[in-house]
Length: 114
Image (cartoon, rainbow, N blue to C red; front, side, top):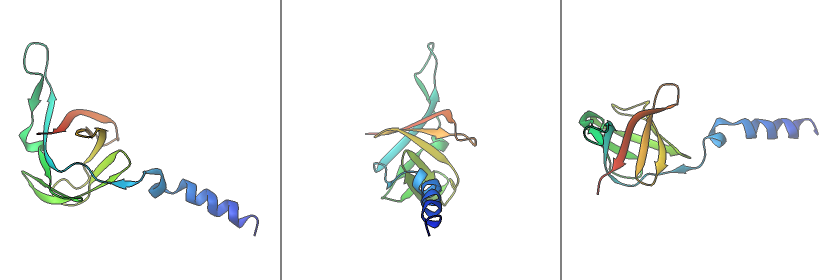
């Protein structure tokens, strides 16, 4: 029995669900997404097809359609709908950065308008 307890404890500590952090939500409202501009023009270049609106604690709407999302720790994952599989890193209360396929932050940033 002494061997089983450390083994179970190791499994629990290695569990992906625990590693992802607590479940949470992001602020409701419209998120405007943009790429960085440059010194000669606009600060950001809006990407309207990337915009989305958080409707409730687990639902979003985008120009492509509606779906659900899940926040675990500082990562927001679109879990259904047209954005299924898209992930964002929470940078601040109203600021997200889209993650690329490798989980690295991309150049696309989204902020809550208003």
